[in-house]
Image (cartoon, rainbow, N blue to C red; front, side, top):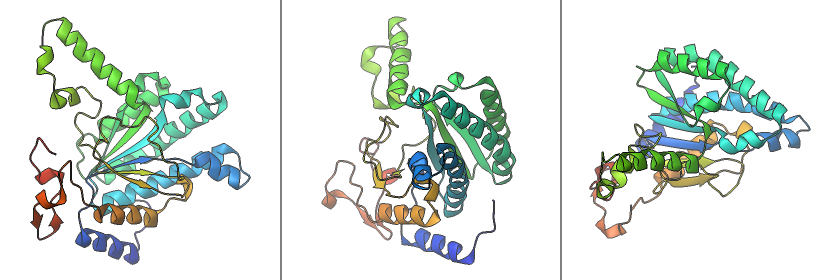
Length: 273
């Protein structure tokens, strides 16, 4: 993908794989494009353009190191409230990015998916996304999941509406609704919950992102603005993740140790994991 990977980078990735668990699913709140541009005396659009390059770099690095799912908070429902010219610019960048990267994603066995109220996007963007999703649907190296016109509250409300309709029609009983059932009505129904959530630009909030799914997700806050977020910063986040004890409601003594350290959620009983 992209430029040739350096030998030094390969060694860093191998070290990470040997040192512990690679998060199966990383979610990223890509924050700081506008502030990056302002700091450099540039228009906000310059930050967004540079941010697109960062997306490519981090997508490549995640696929190479062994991440199976990468979810990027690309455009929130709240972002529609930004100035019209900025929203238009973001839509043009999204359209161009999908067009430019689709062949490369397919070539590198990466599947593209989306979550969110995609039907609110411009028609031409919807069309390009649909074609890219269809073209890459059988790829299995990694899934790149774009959250577009997305918010956690919107997603939860949509799930409640769908389930309420089933109850009203007598197709299910309310007592049948549990966490597993509810999760089937989320836009992430075919994607595991994130192991690691990265937020750039130093802000300490989740910004209405994956509110249900991040119940047991590890958080990593980087002070770096998204346009400057690099492979090095990604690897630092993964190293931090590997150093943590994920108890999922248990105490340390209950966790079974194996030759690789503490077992992860995939090895815990279903009612805990």
